Figure 1 (cartoon, helix red, strand yellow):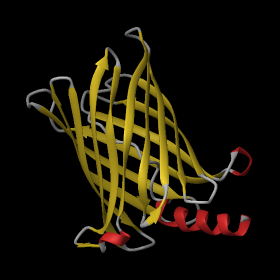
Figure 2 (tube, rainbow, N blue to C red):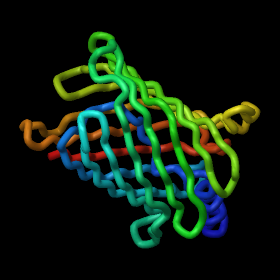
Figure 3 (cartoon, rainbow, N blue to C red):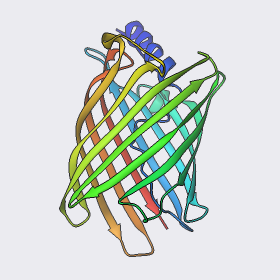
Length: 235
């Protein structure tokens, strides 16, 4: 079992190493605010232990349009065998600022996989509100220096406000292969499931939010159910 688990971890980690996690990127204004966050995501193949990816990040709103973030990502089966996997530098630049019925931003992320390669992820992040319903849809292109190709990744989420500071809904992620030559359906990856967004504390000076979801489906063509969690503090 240990040998099989190690092989599965390597198989999943190799293509996923360019990912700092599975979290829906949102266009937002963090101007002048400092942020610290804990991220945590898992992949659970059938009959295998879950692989764990804890992450720590710091962010800063440089202006009303530009927010930058640095993330460190680890990988392992448990707390005792975590190893540093990648450094990630993410930037979100707002294209719109309230003049449209939607929010649009450009997401750019540089990923440095420890001792391996680097990757660049780039694309638009879109968001709108329809009454109490908030919708997100993102399209990202990812170039990996090890594979020397560019792949297409999709994100979406729809959440409904059920109480002040609390939203429930669905979210999902997809990897369909090279951007101009999609993989056969059986080799594509699609996952979806319930999502919760909550504001745990907000006194105008400090804000603590929690985003979490459980997803069923495939990860890079192999069955792998996922749990994602993002706990963020803004000051």
